[in-house]
Length: 471
Ligand SMILES: [Fe+2]
Image (cartoon, rainbow, N blue to C red; front, side, top):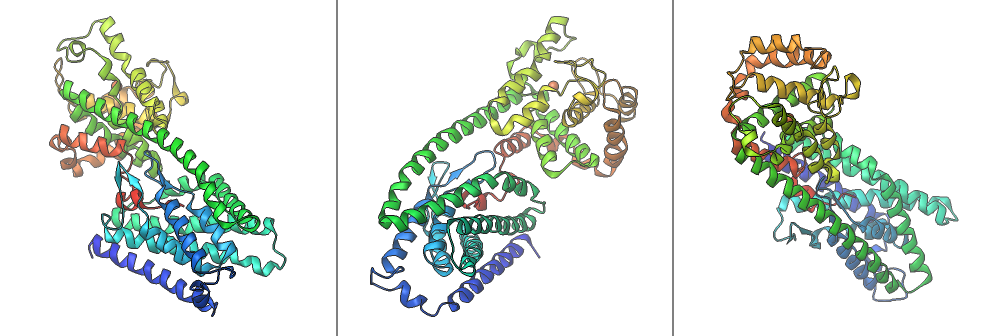
């Protein structure tokens, strides 16, 4: 079965689940139909209030904030849904969430995404996902009726529990989709989910506050609360735009480096492959492997600050020239340090020439003072440098390079990692030799890869995340 078919079957199953919850929820209240279409404004639920809530949902779903580093979108929509859950019932929430997800038109990369320019499978998945997760959340919040005299504390607690469960369901649904479409574990989404717990609680509280406003004042007053929210969103947007610009600049610098130093392009790709293989063989987690991949692709970006005549000098470097070249790890870390999402990568890059015995640069760190990620990069970088022809010397054979690794194990290289690299990566390399064919790492391929990684969306289904709501 191909991926697309599997994906479509999966989305169909989610839609069936959402529909089932719709039917079960509808059947729990026989008067729902007459309530929703009631024209009597004295009824707590009537056609005007349902239309008003739908409008709120569309506005909240439209003004998403999409993080450039994770591609994850956040919005205040969950607060709106919590509010609707409390003042109406689960069925209305599901209807409002469904319409909100279909009619929203968020901006991404300067383009408004709406139902007519979004893939049908994306729209179906997002609509079913949102309806299902908030339907479940609404059922949990509805448990307040079992507590008799329900006060704001009971409602608040149930709202937060409901949102956390909804977030977990959302994580499961998106993870399975990623597993189907990309064949990878989506544990990194789980981590980002855990990080959003405080904001989940804040959003739950905001929902309760809207209920308070609804009960104490005219419903229309709720619109006023969108003004500070939109201002806050504008500030976030400016911040994210500055981060996006910084990422674009780094990408451009990396491209410029590959253009001025022909060796770097192919070298970068091979170092990436060695580093990823070593990180996996050592047993690092998926997200750590991805951080190492990014660090490998950008590890020499600081060379952009080194004069061409030194970078491409055919003979041996003088002491002062070598000292200048050594600055590239600090320059690279400074360039990446401007972007919050690349802080970890920046910390790896600044250490990628530190040696196990403390004789490396720039800080002379040793043994466990050097991060495992930087030590991995050091081995991959050195091994590729040894096995590649340079203007001033010929490439070493694989056997000679391995004996160099062994010889420098415990001085230049972390001895444990060096052993894993020789036994767990290089020994298996023979059978996969074609994969390390140098043509595969042409400059063009590397640039495409780097761009994908730098944009940090490569491990998420873009169409889902770009227009999907991370609740
Ligand atoms: Fe380097």
